[in-house]
Every structure is written in structure tokens, then in C-alpha cells.
Amino acid sequence: MRKPFIAGNWKMNKTVDEAYDLAIELVTGLRFVRDIDVALCPPFVSLTAVKSAIANTMLKLGAQNMHDQDRGAFTGEISPVMLKDLVEYVILGHSERRQHFGESDAFINRKVHAALRHGLHPILCIGETLEQNERGETESVLARQTREGLAGVSADQVASVVIAYEPVWAIGTGRAATAEDAQQRCAFIRQELRAMFGEVADAVRIQYGGSVTPANAPELLCQPDIDGALVGGASLKSEDFIAIVRAAHP
Ligand code: 13P
Image (cartoon, rainbow, N blue to C red; front, side, top):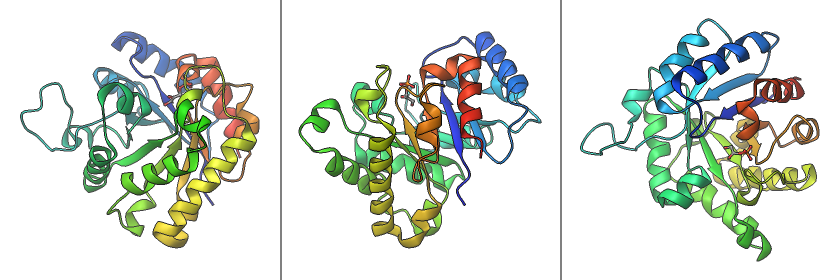
């Protein structure tokens, strides 16, 4: 009942020309895609180029961040109004934004509302750090980030939100969560969603992210509460990303 969803977060990689070329490779390699959503999330400056590369294909476009205000004196920021005709998805609250740019749950929550107001699908990232994991705080961190990130969102709206569970210690380390642990955490997040929103929680897609590769994708993606992946490093190599998408195919 939940359509698998694989998204590639290209982070701060690729020039505009390189992004276009990668998108063209993916268009060719992903022609087989059916019954699954695949989104590419390049840097802002490459959105237009990637959009033209994927025109008339099944591939979708996402941004990696945005501000919560529609316009104004926010030098260097990009608003939902600028994104809404360009992308379908927007990654919000990525741990790199929380860590390096001091984004709080309250700010991320305002961005979620701004995205929903403008018809964008937020991909809300949550996940515990290594220290929190070792202190046994994983569930309390996930509960807080889910509740504060989605505060004030209605049950109708939450169906268009995607949650990405990305344990911070697994990002870019080559050390993914085991499929069993990732499943357990995603099931816990769904339980939180059920407590907040009722049965619509069963319609919300939850991705796993953190060192997803062609090797570990099959096992991660067949877990009942893992509905897809948010892929970093491996999304920059067309062969790897294509293999991961293939693993998600129902
Ligand atoms: P890696 O796949 O490189 O670990 O990155 C995951 C991530 O942060 C996706 O948002």
C-alpha cells in the first residue's frame, strides 16, 4: 500500500554540467522504473538543469533544504515560493543542517509547514547521534524529533510527508544500521506517528538513510516498515544508484 521511494541526496557535489550528465545517465539506466518513486536532489544551482534532463520521465526532483519564509531579507536562502514550481520534494532537517548550521526542531517544523502550505512534499530527516545511541537515548530522540518536527501538522497533511530515518553515525561512514535495527527504529517511528495521527500513519513512507549501498539495499528495503532509502554517497554513482533502485522494485 506504500509505494517505495528512493531519493538521491547529492549534497554539495557536482557542478551544473556534471549534475546534468549524471541525470542523463540515470534517465537511461532507470527506464525500467515502475510503481516506485525515484527522486534526485541536486544542489539548488543544478535544479533547472536536472529538471530538463529528467523531463518526460518518471524521475522526480527534490531540493535539499529551504527557508521557512516566502521572501525577504535572508541573504543566501531559497524560499518555498521559488521551489514550488520546480520540485516536488524538499529534504528538511537533515542531520548535516542540524549539526553544522544549528537548525532546531522548531525551525525545521516551520519549514515543514511552509512546504506543506506550498504543496511540496517534505522529506523530514530524523536520527540519533552516536553518543545518543550509546547512551540508550535513540527512541527518545526519534520521538522528540518526530513530534516537534510534525507539531501542528494535520492527519490529512501528514500523508504527504516522508520521514527519513538517518542515524547520524551511519551517514558517510560505510557503517549502515543492520536491517533488523533499522526496521525496529522505523517501526518505532511509525508507532509515534500512529499516536499522533491515528491510522494514517500506515500511509506515511519512512525511508532509511546512512551508508546505503547496492550490497545492503536488498535486505534493508525488504523490511516491513522501511519504504525506501535516502541515499547519499551511492547516489553520485549512476551504477550504484540504479542498483539500489532495482533492489527497491516491488
Ligand atoms: P550516505 O549514503 O553517504 O551515508 O549519506 C546518507 C545521507 O545523509 C542521505 O541524506
